[in-house]
Length: 281
Image (cartoon, rainbow, N blue to C red; front, top):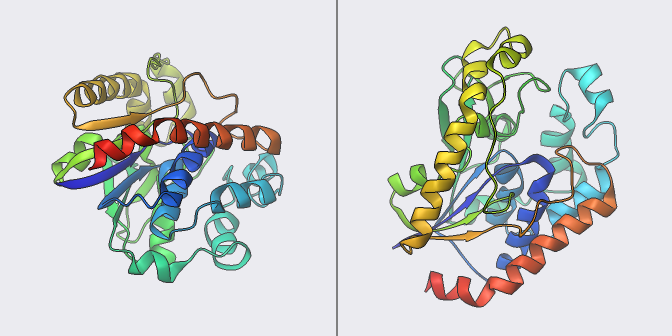
């Protein structure tokens, strides 16, 4: 029975996920595959490279660096998160991503992006670490409005995977992953509310398919939460989620809040560890 790990996005709420997966790595818990969306992919890739602690470390170190993320990056580059710095300079020069460990680890690693032309999800299996694959990783976490679309290796333009498939449990099951751990960054009882379609058309005049997807996103997301709950009740999924809303913004530069959310993830993982191990037997 193939065991999978499904990681939701949520921008800096993903530090909760970082805390959870660091505990699992430290406990020697392995999966046959991982699929991540947005922060779930950009943080989750450290599971395949076996680098617990790295996500928190580089966010604490560079969180207030204007090259990493913030208004200055948005105004000067068109991207809230600095494309070249965050996805190329940082992992290859400043806080080294272990490429050898990533590529030698047999765990399959998938990420989700959204095709700008169609508004549909695009799934990418990342086996190697090179410029093209890092651009796919960047595309998966490229939030609409505050990020330019990313042109990936096959010529398509991509944005954040959370637009079209926020929690891709069903897709992973379609690949044969029958027993899955799902890490959410909102409490289990959270439900997304609708946002006006006209607002997205105004904000995204050059990306009509993305505007339509954003207007419908609450329906997709809430349906996925219902499906995850049903799979959990049936014993096919094990859900890890914060007990209450995480006290952090989507773009957060306060190191104290970063540490707090990461520590919340660790405490949550440690509390459910015996049940998690039993589920994965």
